[in-house]
Length: 357
Ligand code: GDP
Image (cartoon, rainbow, N blue to C red; front, side):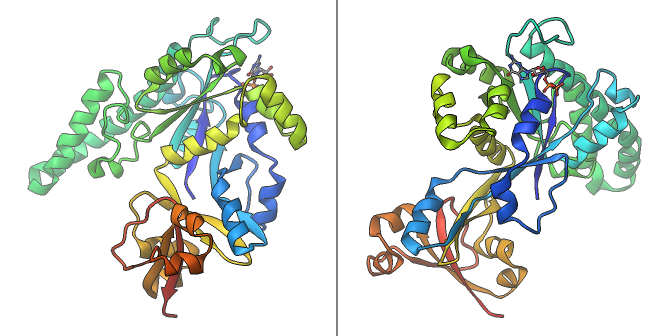
């Protein structure tokens, strides 16, 4: 499954946040066969639609989609020079599908900032610089080969041109993601770091959490990356509390839900994912697919046989189903569609697949 790699400067709250992300008992119960590695935090994607579906279908349980965050320790200035943990750090980022940078905006005189002051934009630049330098090294190694190939094969010219363009962007201090080059197929084989989408988690205190104009300012700073605001310490405390006390703590800081919920939703968005839903007596479940996937591809997430033997999909939108009250009523109201193999899935489709075995 796709992962977001958590990075950030020392003392910004990565361990605190990661601690809050892990030890999810409910999750272990739903995914008994999933090997959950010690450096992976699996967060359920909150989805109230599942409860509603479970009600309609009398499902015994609900199974939400999940988002996985990998703890990537050890970014230090000079990582791109391959010193110490540097190489390992960069290799770990390369394996992640998106980069999740934790940024300190909380103010606490007892917690030392590596650069002596809380300065989000300078922290972002420090991390970006290491990633950009690593990509420049990759490109400098690749360019002579690409040049040679382009001389003998005309069809290799676009690959060279895009690599040259990428180098210019990186030389100017911009990430390839920020420059809109994330989806270039020519760059894919180079496995660059800064083409990955970015999610920024601002580790904030109560002041910032209730200050929308400050948040808007920070969002602008990281665009086109996604942004989330939470208090890592509060998130860590929440997981020790029962539901009632959780609600009280959240209320006391003016929040309607845990920040991890927003982080799961944002991570899902950053990775370009969406869900569709299935429901029956056994379970109401959200399945993870990529945006733009067709019905057979979506079926393949449940079982490869479903994709191979795909005939059609019986689909009703969640809203129509709820408005009708039951599958039978939705059918007689003409709200249930038969979709073929070219159908592109929409978030919130409630689906039953028909297939040959
Ligand atoms: P890491 O080095 O990025 O993993 O940072 P840690 O999670 O170890 O946090 C560094 C210090 O900052 C610890 O003493 C944490 O308790 C503290 N800390 C983390 N998050 C917050 C926060 O949101 N507010 C405050 N005041 N302190 C925090």
